[in-house]
Image (tube, rainbow, N blue to C red; front, top):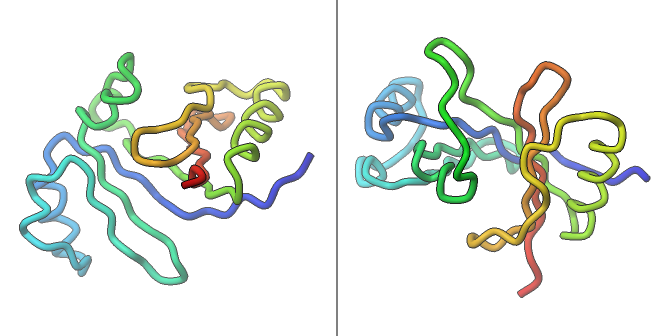
Amino acid sequence: MTVDAQLGVVGIVVADMARALAFYRRLGLDTPVSADDEPHVEVALARGMRLAFDTDDTIRSFHPGWTPPPAGAGRMSLAFALPDPADVDALHAELTAAGYHGELAPFDAFWGQRYAVIHDPDGNTVDLFAPLAT
């Protein structure tokens, strides 16, 4: 089965939201200072892409066993948008059947998405998501 997954979000897990956003503001990202105290911040990029920042606590809110990587290791993930919640389940099943590590099985997330996490061959995090029906 092949589904049309579109790269939609690059996610960065941050230990300190204010410190991280200050850095990215210096690179030209438009984020209000009021976002410094938020647990999740998204910045719209060109062509519908988004850059998302999540605190360690935000990640632990849906993945209780998550621990930050060692200092110097990456804290970024790629997130692929799928058209339908069933596509998240199907693609997750296809990838795990092919031998890739499924970090989080598909679930209905409190923020309104069907969501799953898989690792690429090098251990990088790849999120799969689709909007839940309203």
